[in-house]
Length: 179
Image 1 (cartoon, rainbow, N blue to C red):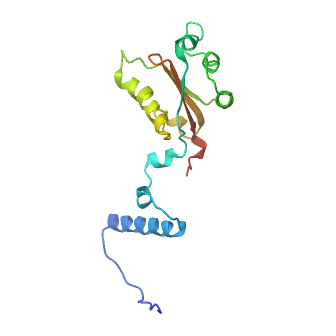
Image 2 (cartoon, helix red, strand yellow):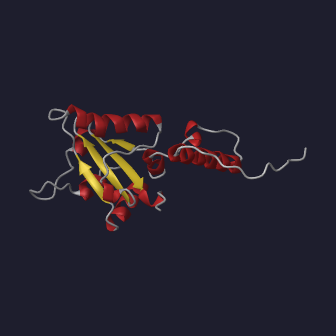
Image 3 (cartoon, rainbow, N blue to C red):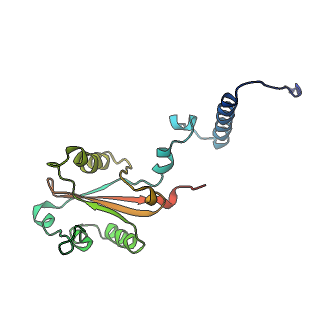
């Protein structure tokens, strides 16, 4: 079948409608070029900030270490800062500990915190319960990063004094494309 050119024509419409249609057509053209077997819902819409950041997320790792090992974790002197070495000594994964140490040297320790369910059930849920759930589901997850850390590689550690667990969330911010 031969295509016939209809020539040029002018479309009159509001600017917002034109921009919406243009973005949708561009998105469909990109999908057509991908030539994949299956599509996801997010393939048919503009990327959200969450979509852009998910490439940096990893599946959280939960270490159930027991009360005795948990009690070996200390703070540095009388400060509020946790002693990372006492945490690392309790983890049974040399690969993860090596990765965390390398990130430390590059300034990638984002936070180490011990949420207290007695003070804030919401904080405990957000940083302990939700991370454990994602680890069990084997789903990448992250939460609570400062804006400045979003394009850096680093990690967060959450200490669960109720379940005697150490939760490690590794983040790969250099995977995020910046424009």
